Image (cartoon, rainbow, N blue to C red; front, side, top):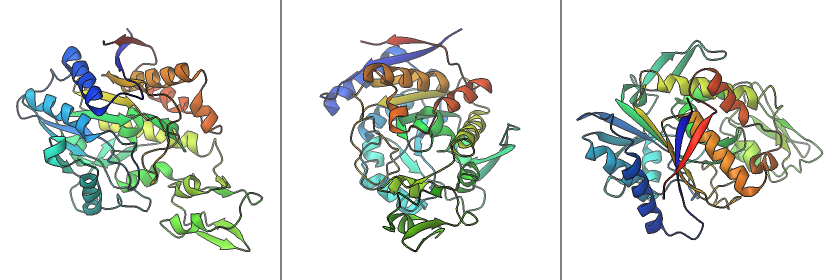
Amino acid sequence: MKSIVYLIRTSNSDTVDSIKKSFSRLIEKVKPFGFIQRDNSIALKLHFGEEGNTGYVNPQYVRIVADAVKAHGGKPFLSDTNTLYRGKRTNSKDHVQLAYEHGFTPAAAGAEIIIPDDTSEGVTAEIPVNGKFVKTAKIARVFSDSDGLTGIAHFKGHIMTGFGGALKNLGMGCATREGKLFQHAGVAPFVKTKKCVGCGVCEKICPVKAITINNGKAVVDKLICIGCASCIAVCPREAIDIKWEAGSGTLQQKMIEYAKAVLIGKKDRTVFINFALKITKECDCLAKDDPRVAPDIGIFLSKDPVSIDKACFDEVCNVCGKDIFKELHPERNGMIQLKHAAAIGLGSLDYERVEIT
């Protein structure tokens, strides 16, 4: 049986108020929160955006989800985990402050923010997975302890996974820093010396000082490198990369097995919402205002994280007339994450798209 993926279309010219009305209509017609019982805690997993980035989901849209959860008697909270790379999302205090600066205040977004500090005792849950790569996943306990989960993702490109949506929001986004480090392990980059001009941008961004400039070229110490890919993202000459099969493909499969850990115990108590608006080349983790690489499509909703990501991918390619993600990241194959997710039972690659008008 095919999974259902709902879509309500938007366009580049739509205003925030217009999109809010469309999104409210989608929620009203689909009624996805019928599983909620009174006082259930419902995690709204999203990405608050790095400083300088504007691709994250508008908090006014998140407010519509929070209000819908409360209308069913639930208690929503907004959450994400801290990052490996440098920036304002590496610790809980600065992370919350940045979220507030981006408009995710309780008054505006309709729910409090919980950013767990995984250096504190009792905030990490170890979930048995027994996967191909992940035996035990380390995720933030706020997600495993919640009664239900709604993934709110910005569908966009990604330097390591080709594209990112619902599955990446779960697998990488709910992992503790130790869990993120495990997923990135083995993806130490190499420098294309002919392209490198020794500008030092990578050296400055590296959170563990694994990069030095030697004789006018960047050098990566693979024994120190944590595989966070910050250097790949910032290199202005595209002189840093990873070996594809040994790196990004494995990372995607680890990420999917982490997503499985997040979903354990939440059968029929999850909703996934992908905003295919301002589709960008890179993730919202980059501290810059990335431009659109594809027209706005709309808002997707499903109970199936595999189907919703596949539907978004298919529609972006259809609208662009090509696989824009492959064009932007030719060494990456984002289908690895979808195929592995389907193979381990997280959802289906077959779906029926239902458009809401």
